[in-house]
Image 1 (cartoon, rainbow over the protein chains, first blue to last red):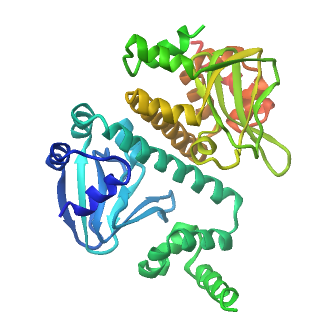
Image 2 (cartoon, each protein chain N blue to C red):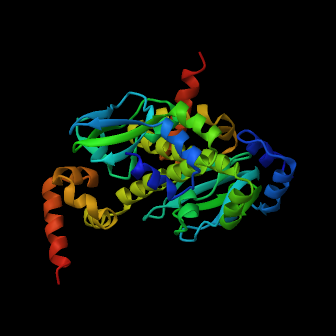
Image 3 (tube, rainbow over the protein chains, first blue to last red):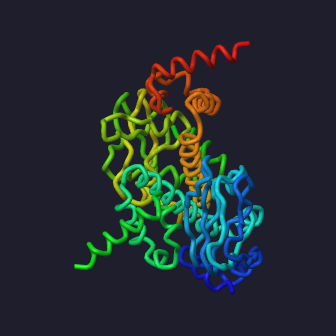
Length: 195
Length: 195
């Protein structure tokens, strides 16, 4: 049950058996049905989530009621509203499951205690925050400086597994374009990458 | 000479004398004249900078040649293009001094070695990256969701010392407005906060 999260962590830090046990002791697990939320905008994000199975999406809703996908997270990915989690301020994001899913999660007091009990987790979460920071920056830069075709190319090259299992509508929302535009971009892409 | 940076660090972690010595051994110092750059867009940002004296600004230049200030850093602040530093990709930012200044800095290999020699620095840099992440997110959100008056209020409440020493033009560039608009906003602000 904890194989995947332990493997994820072992890519950055090596744990002794008792450290692994301590870490496991702070974890909770939850099964989610498709469409079920783990976070609503305006709530404080009290947990950091690891996707053990399925797929979650983080999105925000603009003044006109339109949804904008900020992030997808499939197995072996972390998700949450890190800004809200770190600052204990209301979340800007909603997070729900777009397939039946299973998440492993822990709360902030447990994480603070983990840093004290097993200091090498400082390193792990430094890497995690670093990656969140890098992804946010990259997203900002690509949104302002690239057209939709380039953003689509980047998306499928970066996340080839996601392209196959996500509804077209969700990918379009992530890229900030209509489903119709995405269909057109996708056909062009396939045509250009055939010969 | 290292008092300020050591005090900055002591807010997050407590160092033993030999750990302090090791940390100091990786530091370099540089005096900068007004307008002198420590980073140009397109270069890889190889250093993380701590402002020991003076004031630096990080800015990017858009396609039309207009400068947009991303961050100011006065004494006791850190600066750099963290995205470039962490990923070793070309910097999007330029960083220069807007007063005669002095910076303390170190390179990435030294930092990696510091993590091994003094693991508690993992904690310190987790906090530093976390704060950079939080500031970036906040900036993105405020830019899209607040008007210039609100952004000016936030700026002077958050950075009261900077308001007094920065040229009007630089603050306007940070807020994404013209110097003329800033003058108007500032007069209104003073009027409203008098009585």
